[in-house]
Picture 1: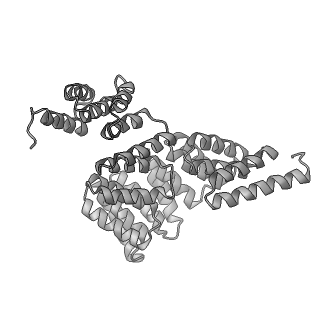
Picture 2: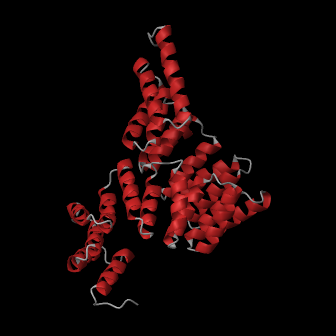
Length: 368
């Protein structure tokens, strides 16, 4: 029980409702101010703490969001929706063990809930625990009255476990039952992408997005394939559209940076790399940015940055240093750095390709 007066309770609720309004309008900083105000008045206000976490996440302030989610879960340990939202957040930032623990708590609160079973099954599938994952995904699908989404999730779990034919059959049967389902079309695209049938994957993604343009994950999947195929302008548009609703997504920011770099838009690439590093500090992201810095004439800054981030045993740090040196026409040093990367990982295709490119540029290799 709280000893708050009725007046302070009303003030906390008012601040919370204002926070919700600002959050729904995308005014994240104002939402944070109001949620923080509500929590100063009523520190045990779990919903306000949840809103604070979600608003921090929307701004890409992931450390602050993580702290607020943990506090919200402590305040509302039996709120299944809150636990699921927190699990989704921690999975997105790579804290899969914490996410799994939260999802198991949700399952303990509602053992027969289909959505909870699906969420846990998907995470277990991504973590490689395929036996339990398929059990959870089947439980979710069997209790979902034929949901296209749950059918697609089960299919992806089966495919990851090596049962690709069964997965494809499950999705195609679903299309017979629900013709033109964007979810099923999109996941058939995922299966095509897994076997590197890029044309088929793109065709299915395009069909899926025409049926439902709001499928953000399919949009990101399409952007990735377009980037791999060197269709950088199209990839950039997809990444930008995705980031319009998820501004702090690391995967999309890096994809945008790499596509911009591939298109020769180096200042745009630098901005995207900086946003990615702000969302989740990572020395390799900064090292990767060094190449674009050199390309826009910030040579000493770029080379110096990559050199400062060299780490013994970290092959990619030497690779990024080699790229920056190569862009600066310091070819002998670049080749030496590339050899260091290859010494740590002699089979990495990117390292081998860079070594060949540097050799050609130095006049010692065959451009073919």
